[in-house]
Amino acid sequence: MIDHVSVQVTDTAASAAFYDRVLATLGGTRLFEREEGTVIGYGKDFPTFWIGPAVTGGAAREAHLAFSAPDRAAVRAFFDAAVEAGAEVLHEPRVWPEYHPAYYGAFVRDPDGNNVEAVCHAPEGAG
Image 1 (tube, helix red, strand yellow):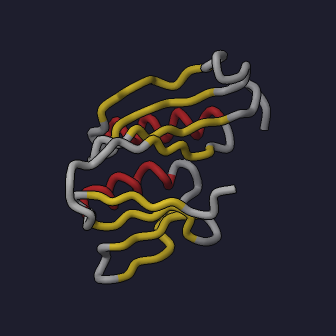
Image 2 (cartoon, rainbow, N blue to C red):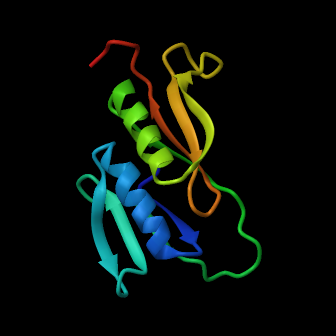
Image 3 (tube, rainbow, N blue to C red):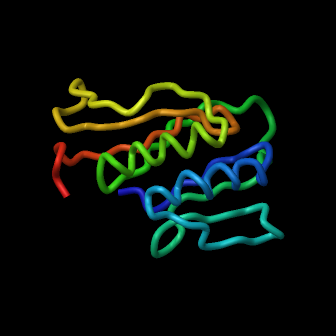
């Protein structure tokens, strides 16, 4: 149902460095830039996730972003890349049976404090 999503960031360069690194582990890449790198689109075939400078004023509110991972190894790679990039760990990779029996996810904070997740819905050993 969602075609794309965008979040406002306080430091586009720092957020871009974070997302360049962690989204690469899931097969995503920077596909679009405009306004000298201040608005950046990520995806596989076309941009589905965007970052840009905060322009609305007021206090930022935490967003939760869940990125699809093809397998559990990609969830682990996402988590490791995020930690290496200095992300705060919210939850290490594990199965979350309260969501469904095969839900495998890891949660970190991005440079703006958003709750960012990589999730695989395939059972262990699938793929």
